[in-house]
Figure (cartoon, helix red, strand yellow):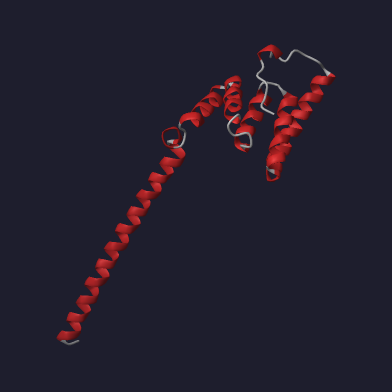
Length: 154
């Protein structure tokens, strides 16, 4: 190998070294970016995604305060009556409050607005219908006073 070939080979080695360093830095940046996004969207939901109304609704559900969850949904539905997310949260609250028929009616309202939610709504409707039927067969006190119920937005 002559002197020019050696110089050219060293030049290529230096270029390859620089490329490897660049690729390594890019890979590390992607790892850090992915880690940040994982934290942002999975571990820090309260800080990044749950603000205002959503935070109140989330906290009410976490505490099992379904009366508050229902109240929040009904209040927000006055401004957004076709919001299927709100309606599904309302139906969940109604189910947990043992308001079987109201839950069924709310899910049917969701299906009227968005038939594509059938796969999500049908099992919920079936569970509520089963509970309603069981209650008709064996009447018992539901523990919720009808005077304290908030009428759902129709």
